[in-house]
Image 1 (cartoon, rainbow, N blue to C red):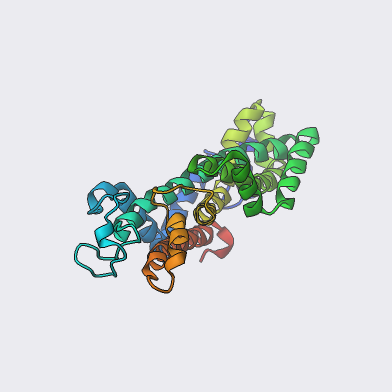
Image 2: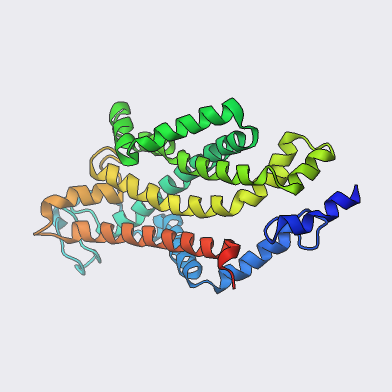
Length: 305
């Protein structure tokens, strides 16, 4: 049984190798980590995302005021006013405190929605790609139906049917978020299931579950990580859009989208009401997109030096 395992090294290539091969999977990931350390997009993206995560976690200590407390005596204070570094809104609430607390909502939406999308999309993609037949027909048909519907419009319809709330935004974005990962994982599984190392594992008596977990899934992780990271940015942007339309987080919850929606009535007299939450959305989306692009470059062997 040593010959089949030894013959896998050449067929597997630089990204795929069994445990006893000359280049184990761990060394491949170490190479990817070195590439990530030299990639400027990864570094900048990680710094931005890390800063946002730190702000979200430290919101109770960083925010100097209660983000939901009304102080009509200090309504519409401009930026750099005493006690209001970024100004106040029409109800006298501190914009800085609301932006800080809003980071919690946005990052939570991105993380939870993409976690659900990754789990569901990966499971369905693995089943469809590995077994084929009717399972592939059912999953592919459902995926095609989901892709035929405009994602944001479909999410808007779901939230409108369930009722406006942040909880329903989680449900809607989770429903529309998994097809991309499903199609990606299915394609990866189809390309891997006929490889020699999979056939060798099957020849030595490995079960389907063991082959999927130990051989198929590890070699599909790179694109999953990249798409999942970029998908977080899409989820944050989608939540902000739904909240802007009044279907997401409800007042007085300090969501960036809700803040922009409430500030549009004062766009000429108090533009900072929309400016600062808009900048926060831009920074979060840019950081996640930079991180995703950098991870793609670092984990894709075709672009390595």
